[in-house]
Length: 143
Image (cartoon, rainbow, N blue to C red; front, side, top):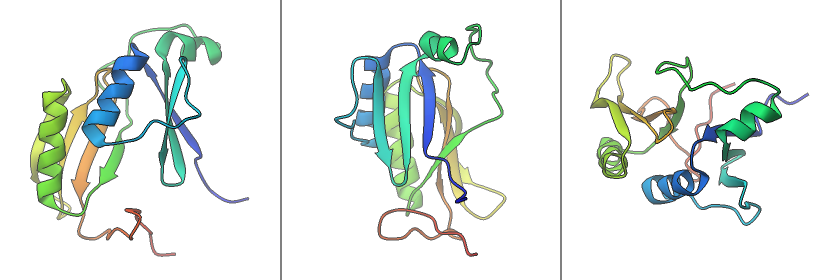
């Protein structure tokens, strides 16, 4: 068996608004496989999907309840420079994201910031000099 995660789905309040948020803010391109109920984004070897939050709870056979501020999970995007961290955070701020940690040097030797998207999902944008990115923008951990 190959270790992997193929798909990450985020429950969102307004699919159209959230899709536009990611397309505009992070420059992600919505896949043609998307439809009126779900948006798919190809992110290297992982697919990120956006799905109505109440429909997602129903699909999991769970009662819907609003998300707490701290969920114990964050999604992260590493970028080649500190300036790109700053640029992305400013773009996200302009689109209505809540900046929960301003861009700054961090204890582990990199530079990062955190924001919450329109639905409260937490994202880190980071420059990590210890995780160089390949030509596709992917991190390859040593074996």
